Image (cartoon, rainbow, N blue to C red; front, side, top):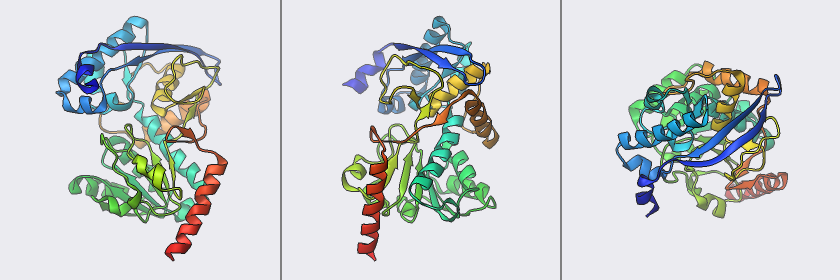
Length: 331
């Protein structure tokens, strides 16, 4: 019923965001959170023009409120041509936030490797959804950091093309269209646009880390229920500079945001009121640039979440202990 009736809902004003303050310049922002009332399954099933009209309506509301840049979050950023049509139809500039999502996803994987005592330079890393815009750029960055890189995608020709681009950057690279290929991985970054979970307990070896950047999430709830020997994180939380008040609870602790939201704020603090990350391709240089901009203004990775709960040192210790036990049993 929600999937059906959401087609008829107008854009929803959620809250005014206050207290974003640049660590470098002291400049303060305000903004707004708006909801595009489509569920992901609805957005994928309606004609793309229907989805565009709804997102553009949200953009028009943002313009009326006085916004000078629009950030597209979650599924609004991947539908159709990933923001290009939306940007063409609006006066204000648009970004999907995916460049900073790439930067912080890779940073989260490297930090998770550190806390789990996994030597990054010796690690096998898998990227699931490596043919998508975010997945491909993450793969290109991670190929410089690890020993072996496993790329997984749905289409053989597309995943082979990404494999060829990643060759020669440092890691030994293999490509696959099956989820079984990720089992040897110590670190898994997953960022598909699937509407249902694609990673199940059987796909994961003891002691591995899964960084799930996708929304809806790629990792099955069964992993949380059945596998206490693996660490699942949700791409890392971004600490926003200043005494920020989002005025709306989207499931994060105070002052924390998703990377896609943080990109929009960082661009505004920088005065970069221009289309930034739109379309199906993200350049490595662009991801690195927004990382530098965000860092300068005070945005930073701040802890992990796993299935709506903060990841504690105690949880990490338990995962390490259970993994060691299960490896011994298997041996």
